[in-house]
Amino acid sequence: MDYVPYKEFLKKVFPKYKRVRKLPLHGGMSCPNLDGTKGYSGCTYCNNQSFSPVFDQAKVSVATQLAESIPVLRKKYPDAGILAYFQPYTNTYAPAAELKEIYLPALRNPEIAGIAIGTRPDCLPFDVVELLAEMNAVKPIIVEVGLQTSNDQTLNAINRRHTFAEFENAVQRLHQAGLTVTTHLIIGLPGETMKDFVRTAHEVKRLKISAAKLHPLHIVCGTQMAQDYANGEFELLSFEDYCKAVAAMITEFNGKVAVERFSGESPDELLIAPDWCGEREKIVAEVERILQQQKA
Ligand code: SF4
Image (cartoon, rainbow, N blue to C red; front, side):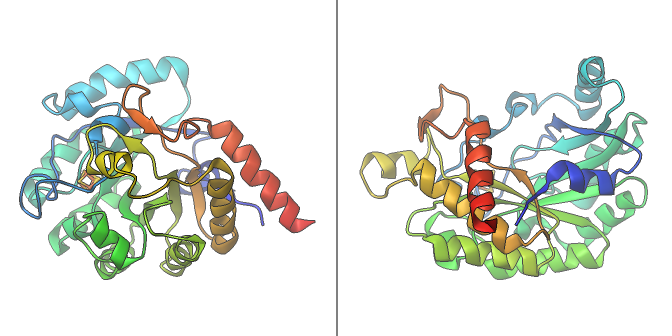
């Protein structure tokens, strides 16, 4: 089984462009799992600083971020379609009227081909989905709904504070509204086995999600998981087992779910383990080798 690269998926969404580049933006929002609405401590692996290059842009308006970033990106990619990407925290976590004001500069900017919005499944009420659908009539909107795993026991253990059923409900409502949905999955969460990874891949395929970002569980400073790891409460997957899990998930996707990422990135100064998670090319090569071997 071959995998469908994310760029193939983007070509379908943006047929006018040979290539599409994501432009990370900070919408200035927080997360209900951090501000006390659902909890204060957040997901046990979460350190937003570790996964967004625009972590420090919270107070800079979206219009200013666009004005500063677009020329930089254009120098490198003069012909690319630009996908404005609201990345850190939960980017639908505000009333619909406020969200509209946050998204409008990107929606109106002629340089922006479409918008990707990262969020949680429990932050997509009906009026927000309606707003996203209205925007989708102007430019393609991709909603990235974090799942991590379809196993409710694990979701509870990592303090996600939402269930798989909530994810399923949100995805169904987004699809009914005509929106494109992608997701993020973590491979190797404590207590999970290959059976869980494949089941999660199966559920993602069943829900007709267009693409998935696959990350190994990686431990970053300042998180609950870092403490648990230091206390020896669980072990991380080896490079080999991670690649086997990715290959098994891709096989389960069966060409129906594009793969946006094969690994996660964290700044060196924050990453505790595993030391191989930044070696994307090596991971892709090993996964491709396993997939080829399966074909032979
Ligand atoms: S939902 Fe996202 S931002 Fe919120 S605590 Fe979890 S990982 Fe962090």
